[in-house]
Length: 145
Image 1 (cartoon, rainbow, N blue to C red):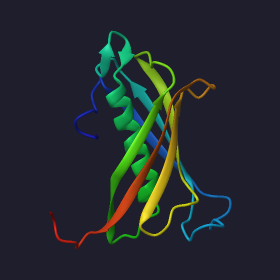
Image 2: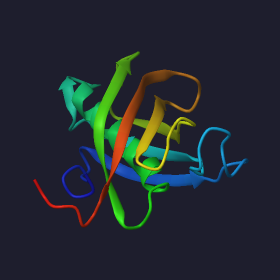
Image 3: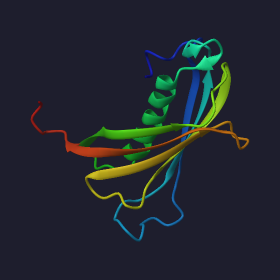
């Protein structure tokens, strides 16, 4: 993502912030919860139609932001992989545009399974897409397939 899509025509700027949780341990798990806020400035190089962002690119961005929140909650000796992602498209994203993607860890997450949810919006109440995913933690020393 940081190399391929970092151009003046695609993702012109990407800045993420981690918001620490109010309650460090949830009732249902031992995972510390928190949220990631990502601000994006998008060009028109990821369009599916003129001035409308391609849905696959939108899904890729949401997957990346949800992975980021999951990565804050995994042990350092593991890595995470997307097991599934479901994206619900609400409105087309006109390009160029500035967006906010918020992702959070779900309370049902545990040591090996990290469930996340995200919302992609304009920061003023217009929601363009929602998503949910499951990330699986894998030991970095596990044999490769």
